[in-house]
Image (cartoon, one colour):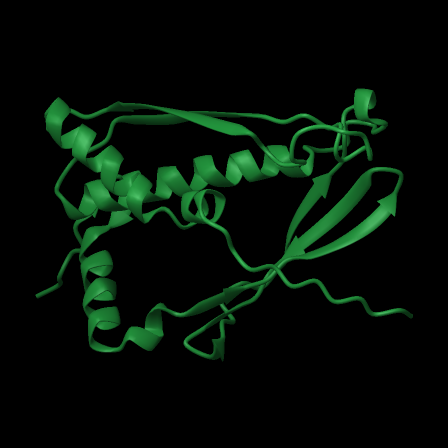
Length: 188
């Protein structure tokens, strides 16, 4: 007899529940260290690479190639539009994180999604970045709008899902709460 995984929203719901169970049994399995490498390419352009990460103290080898990202600034900020700028990538990271949270948590709850989309925007004033008097250099506000369609969930279930995803989103948590950041300098 062959067992078939329950797929909801493109998520292996049985695998998700098994992962939750495994982390309950061994909390170390929930510990990750993610990595990114950025190299300046001149002007405002940068290339980024992401590949490996560490889970429960062990390197993961599931990725055979780097994910490559290009970053730049728009011409108004002295760039050439070769890619999104860093704060746009940050907004996209929030949208990606919300989407994963919605899809996975909906799957675990038996909620089917037929459409899911996020608009994320943030307000930023570059004066402090330019060394001028002004507000903090980061976003002063971020707004996200989720648009979701489900054939089997009530509006109340979708509202509860929205609140839960916000409460458990790692990217939202990083944005909403102070995170210690250490920066070291190696002179070559």
